[in-house]
Image 1: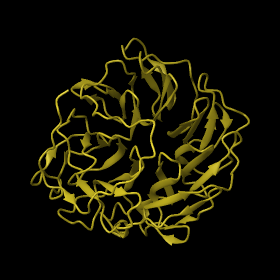
Image 2: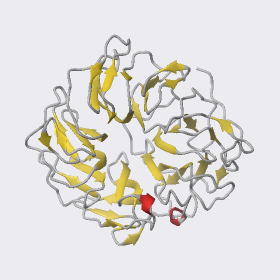
Image 3: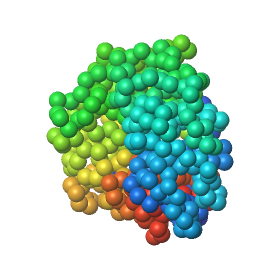
Length: 415
């Protein structure tokens, strides 16, 4: 693999890096993945992939779709919003479950599969927002019923607790993974929304636990967390017996982007060692305005109290970023962007901008885009990125990446 070089261009770098003791992560990836996608990935025939998860030798993809083909186009198989497949061969498994609305979240303990989304019926069984399934058959576990009202858009199993984020009454909660009962571990009021009908309901849209399971970075539509001013982004301390709101916050998130997008945080991910996290946003172009964090990826140091500005911010110049994954070697971002390194752009390539359609890899330390550029259809955007020990999975609503046809699902292996 050729050595990657930084693409020259303008980028806002505001404060220096802060070091911290590594806590370890199962997936750090010391190299950048290759630009040539694997040929052995299933072909999702409609809609979009919103979330992916690996459980042992099975990969799951959930979202909004109804039919899938194996990698070789040999047949069309009905799969309603969720399917399992072999990540090595591209063949579909026997897993089959039917949802009456979209799947947005997946979690596993290595044995069971939890699924979150906008549904209230799974296989004809009443389950709202979250359900526990047999990962081999798709059968509903009758012992698990969270009895929530509302959607679940993210979830993760952290130290034996299944943490949910969404539009349900608490917006963020920890439930018993066997029964679905609220453990009471998270009792933090998450309230408020910008005064704009386009903001949608108050919700925790996405979150990321740090590798140690002691912090939870959340993004979504809210203005207060635990009675403290926290608009669109907050950090939660995951203590031994309860969760509390941390002191981390940047008032930059109080600043509006375009009026039609009063909330604009879209995804968050911690670094492999937990020392920093990345937030990506939508919002619109505001050339050379460092008070706005719109249409950008930005790095925040976990233990840094200086939150006036991020460590760095890389602006697209007017295009949304929807998903992010951070490794030792790179920060991968995906959306419907045309450029990166583009703080002076306004739906145009400003000075120093580099073409990175659909997907990009950024240097974790400087934030500048690498020369890595597989190119990808832009569509509405790429909703999910998933790291595994062998590479990077890409889920979206588009059909081309790396100059090849890969319908809504692609895999870029490590070199």
